[in-house]
Image 1 (tube, helix red, strand yellow):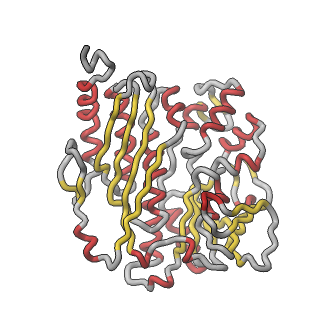
Image 2: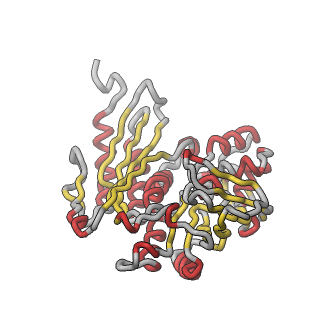
Image 3: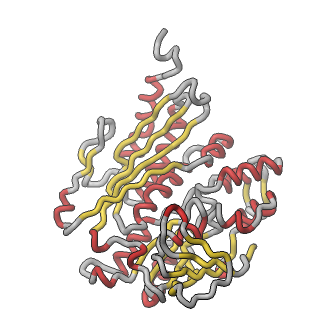
Length: 373
C-alpha cells in the first residue's frame, strides 16, 4: 500500500503548483512578503498605522453548481473569475479595499493542467481587482469525490476606515438607486438553470440563435467584477478628506443569491423603501430563455437570478451623473433603477420584499413589468 495506491498523487499536486506559479506571482503587490509556496501568505499592513480606526472586512464564498457546467464542457479557466466576484465584491460593498485573497480546490483526482486552469482564472481576476492571491490549497479526495469532480471556494480580507464604512445607516430618503449591469447569470441560481436545461433536453453544445452562441458558453459567462469600479467611485465622489458624515456614496448592494429586491433590502434602513421600476431596463435574453424554457414564474425568477442587475449603487442625487459617467468609462452599462422613499405615507405598487437574509431593515417595492428582448 502507498499513498498513490490509495488515490492521492502528490507528484501531480506539485506539478499543478509549478503550472500555476506564474499566474499567482502576477497578482503580487509591493505589500506582499515572501513568495509562492510558503505555509502561510503574508502581507505588510504598515500603512494601516495611518488609519484612525481600521476595520477588517472578510468574506468567503464559492461558485455553487456552476462548476458542474464547467466540468460538463471541460472548460475550467472562467470559474475563477466567478469566485473572485463572489468574494471580493462582497467586501467592496462596505467600502473596504481588499488586502488579500486565498482559494481552495477540492477534487477527486488532481489533473495538474485542470487545476492550473482554475487557479489561472482566479489569479487573472485578482489582478483585475488589484488583490494579491496570497495563498491556496488543492486537496485530493479520492473516494469522496469522483475523479473528474471538483469544487472551489475562496476567502478575502479588506480594510476600511470606520467613519467611511458604507451601508444602510448612510441611506436616506431622496437617494437614487443606480444599477450596474450584470454580464450574465453570474454564479447564482444554477440549480434552477441546470434543472431547466435538463428538463428541456437541451445539450450544452446546442447553438442558441437568441444568444448568438452555444448554450454552454452562455452559462459559463464569467461574473462581472465590480470592486475596482465601486472603490474608484468612492474615491472620485468622496475623496480623502471629505466629511465622513456627508459621504454621497451611501451603500452598494451586490445582487447575488435571492435576486435584486432581497439584496437591495439588506442595505436599506428600517423606515425607508426602495422604489424599483422593472421597466427601467431590458432583461437579457438568457434570463427570458430560462423562464420560457422551464415555464418559470416571474416572481420565482426574480427571487433567484439577477435578471441583468449585478450591483446597485445607492447615491445622493447630485452624484448620479458621476456614477453614470465613470461606469460608462469602465465599460459597465448603468442606469437609474429607482429611488429611496420614507415608508410613512408611501403606497406600494408591486411586490414588497423585506426582512431577507436575517436583516431587519428597510423594504423594496419592485413594480411594473419587465421588458424582454
